[in-house]
Each structure stands twice: as C-alpha cells, then as structure tokens.
Length: 284
Image (cartoon, rainbow, N blue to C red):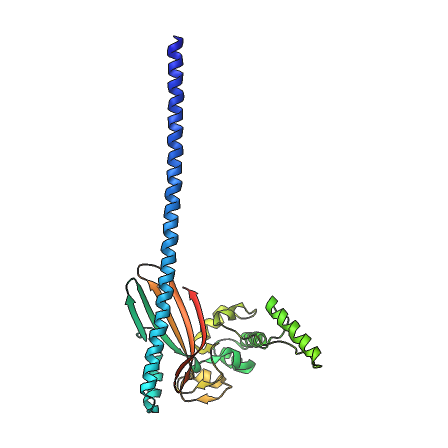
C-alpha cells in the first residue's frame, strides 16, 4: 500500500514539474515572439524613415534642378522667365505638384511657395503685423498679438533660454571692454511659423486665419504681382515685380507606410539660378 502511495506521489510531483516546465517554456516563447515582433517593427520603421528622407531629399533635387534648368534656358527672355516663376506656386489645393515620382518602394511630391508674396514676420514690424491681424481679429486681439511677436523678434525682455543668456552676457562684456553701452536686447528671429504659437498672447486660431499671408523666410521684399491686398497694405519693405525667394516643400514616404518626411528648403532666386538659404526637416 505504501509503495502504491509513493508511486502516486512521485507521478504527481512529476506531472507538476512537467506542467511548470511547459508554462515556463510557453512564457519564454511568448516573450521571445514579442521581442521578435518588436524588433521587426523597429527595423521596419527605421527603414521607412530612411526611405522617406531619401525620397524627400530626391524631391528637392528634382524640383530645384527643373527650376534651375528652366531659368537658364530662359535667361535671355525676362518676360517668359517671370511667367514661369509666377506659375510655380499652385493656385489651389488640388493643383498638381511641381515634381512627383515613385522609385521602387518610395514616393515624393514637391510644391513651391513664393514667400516673397507673403509678409515676413521677422521684418514686418509692429505696424505691419497689426495691419494683417486687424483683418481677421478685433483691435485688442490684433494689437496684443502684434506687440508680443514684435517684442520677441526684437529680443525685448529677459531671454528664455541658456543660449540667449550666454549671448547677452557675451555682448555685455564686449560692450564694456570697448567702452560702449550694452544693448537693451538681442534680435531673436523666428525660424518657423510653428514657433509663433509659443508666444504668450498669440492664439493658434488667429494664426490659422492669417497663415497663408505670413512667412519667416522672406528677405524684406514683397512681390507685388503675387501678394494679396492685405500683404501689400502691411508691407514695409521694397516692392518688386517677381519672386525673390522660393520655398520648396518636399514630402517623401514609403508606400503602404504612414510615416512621411518633410523637407522645407528656401532658395534665393538669382539671375544665374537658385541659391540655398535655409533647410528644415521634420516628420509628418
């Protein structure tokens, strides 16, 4: 009887060990499978990011090459050259892109914006900004936003970051060594329109209503042929007859993947072609 009981006990223990081993193996397998799926997902995302950036950069190269080649071909015909530049910016959201293509698993599309047809935030001044904002907001809201943005551009008030603090200290020391009075502030131009929403007193709703009239990429000149009546009324710089700067917006992506890379490249329009001024990148 004792032998039967001992045998049953051993079989029970063995069964528990087997079940526990199976449970452990199942857990390990599940963890390994999850890690493999996670690694595969990371690899796929990195591949998609690389393809997206490559395609966006290819879009910039394709679009600028097209424009440069055309400008050189039309170098002796100013009328045709101006007509070509005027046609670059699409007049509606449904207009075709300037350049678009698909290469293997990637695609790109490029559009162009004549930033000289917009009011440059960094050069507009208080009065220019006020005129633009008055068209879409109350006097009090327009004035508050214009004051806040202009103060930020001029560098009024205390710097909000360590780099600005270092520049102020450096300028103060230099002024003292040279026997000059220290300047009141430093110029802090905006590098992206997205930065405007970080300014206290400036609402996103207000900016949405004037987004197509503003830029941070201008050179202070305004293309009178393409600018709106509101921009012309607010312009404080010189008026010109053709674009002086173009913004190329290229988006690249891997087909069947949601990740999109956007490159914004700003170019001066010179007689002999385009000259790069600014380059921005971000994921969309």
